[in-house]
Image (tube, rainbow, N blue to C red):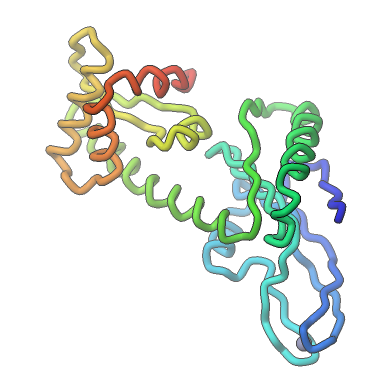
Length: 228
Ligand SMILES: [Zn+2]
């Protein structure tokens, strides 16, 4: 199967598709083939709710999700994902190669966007939904950090979201304002103060445990600091 990938990355795109229902009826419906959550934040909610690209058969009125290739992009959080139907998983290696070469070609043509991270390849919408759910969960803790930082004299270090995701680490890390001259120590103290203020931040607690076990893991994390 060959999918033609739309060269316009900046916008959400609907396209007309022919769909065959299990009752035998064939009908046409409009499905998303590109989603840009910056322009259409509601679409992210639609994906999370399980209503994305669902269609209703005009004959038997069955409502179902129609699997169909689409691109999901959230440039603010550095997520560009290619979502193929689950059935295409056996072609993963070829599709990955195709995705990377097309992506390279397309990103050259986008003005004003510097895309220095790779797209993610998924098979089936569930994988995307799982990623979005865990990002939302992490975002809640980061929002709490942002709130607390203003109250207890913490500075924030921002890591590139795509790199943070790859390293399984939160993209915003606290450090104490009053520096000891050793950034790593300042981060450990920052995390300790944060957790003293709010002991329910599981992700930050895990991060602190990870750093305490091996403080040099911060070298890699800090090498992806966001330019201010
Ligand atoms: Zn039907």
